[in-house]
Amino acid sequence: MCGIAGLIYYNSALYDSLGSTLLSLIQPLETRGPDSCGVALYSGQVTAAQIKLLLHGNSSTPWPQVQQWLEQQLAAMNSLVDCQPIPEGLRLVIDLANGNFDPAQFKQALHSQFPMLHVVGMGQAMEIYKETGAIELLNRKYGLNHFSGTHGIGHTRMATESVVDTHHSHPFTSSYDLALVHNGQVSNYYKLRFQLERMGAMFQTQNDSEAIAHYIHYQLLQGKSLEAGLYQLLDDIDGTYTFLVATRDKVALVRDKFAAKPAVIYETEDMVAIASEYRALLNLPNFDSNATIREPSAGEVNIWSVLPTAKETAERTLVNH
Image 1 (tube, rainbow, N blue to C red):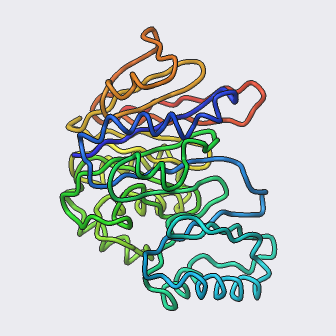
Image 2 (cartoon, helix red, strand yellow):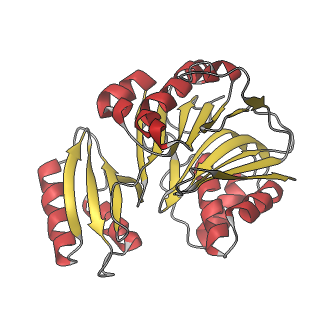
């Protein structure tokens, strides 16, 4: 049993509260799983030709050597824009304009040189932060209360099928700006993983939730829309699950055909909030009991798009399967 939460802002006046509000949604859900927690937060802090890349290590990581190696490797590609230390990690900004940076090759070279390091996430908008233990610890470590952005998803975990450490914590990612948080079980995980690995997916953990992230990425690589890929997922992935997947400009909520795992949706003109339990929504600033509040049906897919327009509107798509 885990807890998931998501937040999409339509009103730019709310952007500065993204980190604090998302954490306040997740915190009540710690009773569903206190082992670890994490968030994927989205903001436009780099230029169109740049990406953010977050690395995570441990207490034995030789950070001065790591930083020197990174500077040498990325300087040779003329790609490094910035390299800043964060707790147990580094936050890089990489320039893609010259076309020299290959993420797959970079990950392989990094792992070969420093096997204790993990690429937590990369993308133009996305930053992923996760930790074992409580939400408050995550917040103190990274100062996420002050994170400003448009949307985000979060998770608190009860480990049932894999180890408890930062790398097996949610959110999981499989490509630029794609993150996933999941409550439930994937019954056909081993078959799914085998198929995805044959198609080129590179798994970093033994967590079944990672397979969902790779599956969605594969569907997108086939040219399918997010909606079509999630529609197909309901046929291909067995189990009981509710999950949130976020991209640079969308957040989607998927509930399996049995509706065995809970979710509640809260919608106003200014925002959409999603949580595993209604009581978490009560932590929203200016909670409005007259808002549209509902539980998704079995086999329902919801997709919200954050559109960067002056009207600050959102496209809402509801797909029943």
